[in-house]
Amino acid sequence: MANLPVRLTPGAAADRVDGWDVDAEGRPVLKVRVRARPVEGEANAALLKLMAKTLGVPKSAVSLDRGGQSRTKMIRIDGLSLDDLKGRLTGL
Image (cartoon, rainbow, N blue to C red; front, side, top):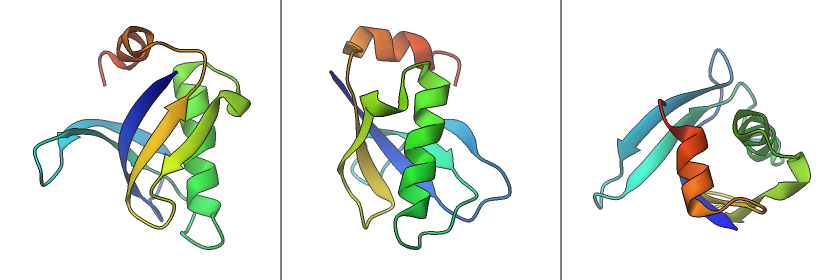
């Protein structure tokens, strides 16, 4: 299992992963944009679907661990080690 910090921007023109950034406390976060609006969990669901596709894992392996109502979220990926996760995100 690996945890991935994400900064989500809903209501974007396209679903995409923008790459790495640093949050206000200096921690690395992955910037992600989704078209879905933050209504009734639609943006969170779109985020999980996009991350599963990007990482090449089943949708059932990706879950929201923290931050359901926040733009900064912690995504849990089952079946991947931290090294595997970093390898799949290299180049972003």
